[in-house]
Length: 415
Image 1: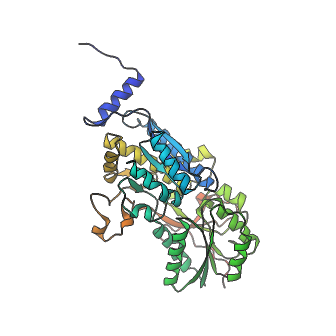
Image 2: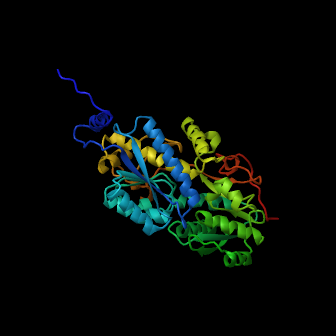
Image 3: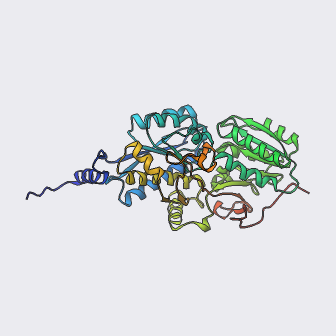
């Protein structure tokens, strides 16, 4: 009997063939997975950098655990700039030029809305990490999945918390003219109205820096509560300019955008931002699983940060769950990976992720709307508050809901 010795490349290819099953096509090493992140303005650079770092850690961990189909994975990061047209273009490039077999990440809803059709037409599975707009899943595209919460669901947490605050009769909503901001503001206003609370909405363009006019208009409304539904550094600018005008977080009950969860950037840009409320996705750090705790240690060491932002957790899981799906599919073939995702049971840093609705079970069977298609149903959403000037985000007080509550909210500007 003749014995053949394989080099490293040959061994990887042989493993890829053996693991991929009889009818599957052997993988080409490394297996490339795209990663979407806004790394340039007007996108949320703070958010994009966090997601990039998290996806790199996912790449490292997947490869350390044996890779995918006998190959290492390589995450190809693409800068969406937070712009829909750019997002669609980079998804096209990732698929047709960079040869990715699937895509994770994604921060801005506008990017998700614009790019999902491109990926679906190319039969490339996508697991969106941080795109909230309900329509991303509601048109029931075969190749599109999401582990971020639905916008309608996340908005409900924000307005329900605001509605229970003392003395709230009028709310000012500052939102961006995007596929996230417009529906989020509408959902928030509608929800507040069910509690008899009036609201007025002010819209701005993504990337706005000078809010002098908007601040004066908000101030003239004499609101009891301000809700900011913008993304990225835009929220920093508005919050500090509002504080300078006497309607900031220490003057009026104030919900700031979640980019403030990057505490170093928050305190550098919003020195008067104490007592701001924010929404955070994922369970508190004290309830992290062993896997999440390890990720938190690695992420903090890599970035020098004191806490882990929700979008970093989501970005990590979006890559790792795709890697598991490809392994379970035994192939990089799009339909096979979709089938694996629809049947997946993945324990990630966010928690146990699965997709109960898809081609095998329509959401309508359980009386659910189409937006639940390929949607993870269990992300934890909390309202948190900075209660000490300069504190790190991982020690923020969880003020809502009661399931996760660690302390009482500090309300300002009421009698």
